[in-house]
Length: 474
Image (cartoon, rainbow, N blue to C red):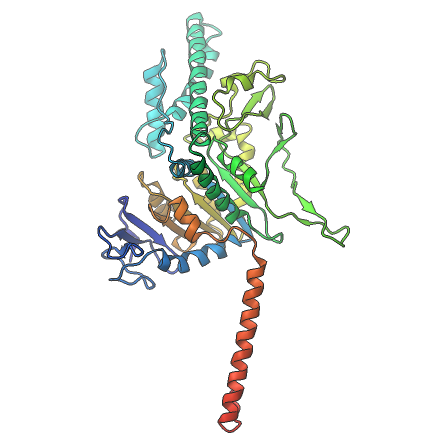
């Protein structure tokens, strides 16, 4: 089956599954009226797979023995990275049954509105989106504001327009921040049982990746989200997150990339510390809602998850003069030069250094592959033959995942798990992710059973030889 037969758009009931034995993705669809609800899928026409029966129905019971061991093996790579996009936040809202989800509708400007929107639409088109959103507008408005500030030195009229644009940009950023807080608040204030279920699944999801032995490199978590759901889930899981921020009251972002880690001293052994389990490195590639640019420093403020308004927390001592313009939430991926500005150059340097190594694996969940600067790093990573990329997504409505798959041209190094079944957060955690624990007891049990099985086989062979006249079979 050649790649040119892969359709570039899939329906909501179409699943894409690609494992290492297949040269290209395998498609299967949901049966309209399944005879057995436990086996709701059937292989699509014109596609075949050696371990999926052609004319028989199948379900998660048939898929799990194939997917779970493969992911378990990948999770124990020397270097493991987890890349998450907005799909994670939407999955948590779906579990918590939150209907009112904030959108990224564009803002309106008094002056230069048509010019800003036209340039924002152009940026969105280059990124593979139909229309520009508020992130595109903020990026364009910032560039325009800088130009007006330069021209304002010789023209008072332009200076007035620059001040007006600055005020409107501040309001747009403030509204954008409120929409992110609204998303957090919608989840935090949801039904108690739904909230508990959502965070239980989030904890299991994170610990499936973070449960690595001390002999392996730390899990590297990367996200393009501005919200703090990952941090909240890590707190509930007891997962220690290591980032570039140093301090307790108002941590400061440090450019020095020290290999800081957490160790413990085992009983009876002195001077030989071991890696503490349940530790991961954490990087928010596009900034965060609680990052503030104060003077020459980037600080993380104590903004509670789900707060109703950010303004009261910008009035704290040490943040004099801080407002929405200082929020580090507005870089957009359409222009790579934005990643060369502080502090994003350090964040993307961390990303490239973490993934572009031999025997490295990236697991992406809810990431639509719309950020070219991230895609380029992944493309560079796949030039190393021992690396692997796993894409888990609920769907591909903008076709960017499949376009990237074809562009990369390395099917042997890519695993695709796409669809409303394979990408469903609860189904993924319940059926396909490895056990969220370092279960040494299970390993020992398997070793004992294998040794007993081998001993039993030897005894049976010996008895058979005795009954056959004492001949030895080699």
